[in-house]
Image 1 (cartoon, rainbow, N blue to C red):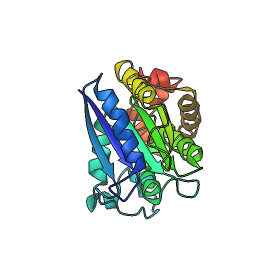
Image 2: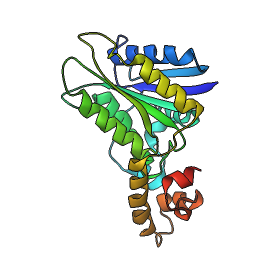
Image 3: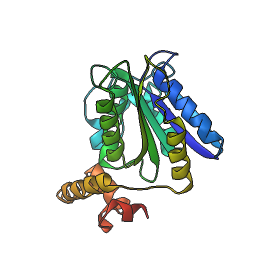
Image 4: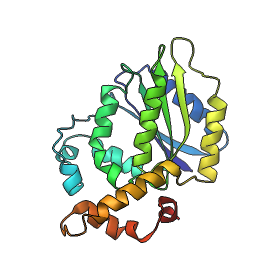
Length: 227
């Protein structure tokens, strides 16, 4: 059984984004046995990021002790596949999705979701969906998670952009034969590697030590690291 974790940046029960994801995963479940966990701002208590940058310095967040972010992190790290979705708020992700991403910012320096694949979904009444999809794809790339399927749906017309089965098939294929890197992630890896190498003299640098411990410096590409 494959574990899939979904986070949608909404604070309501009825969500076009969430509905679409459910429809796609129904198709996936016809071909691969999956265990899906759905999370939203409404179902979780997530405190607002304070911008203290402690997560970059220590890989810990004090807020994790008073809300559900630790649970969500654990679920995502244990998953085989991760899906992020958000409605369009003025050509950007929703506030709850942005806060979710802010709380995970340090993951962008350590490729925390390496070895997994993902999907991103946006929903809008008219426009701006492509911008949201592009942003979420970029976030996933920094987390080390290649996006194998993306959907931009228009909620005022219907819940299906005509690609439900196609998106489901891409997820099925990735669960059977994982795609563990792409050119964007490889480029991010090369850039971050140069930055981290310049921090070698900082003995107490948590991020440098993480890279060293996990052999990030020992290979020439992210794809090789995963292999």
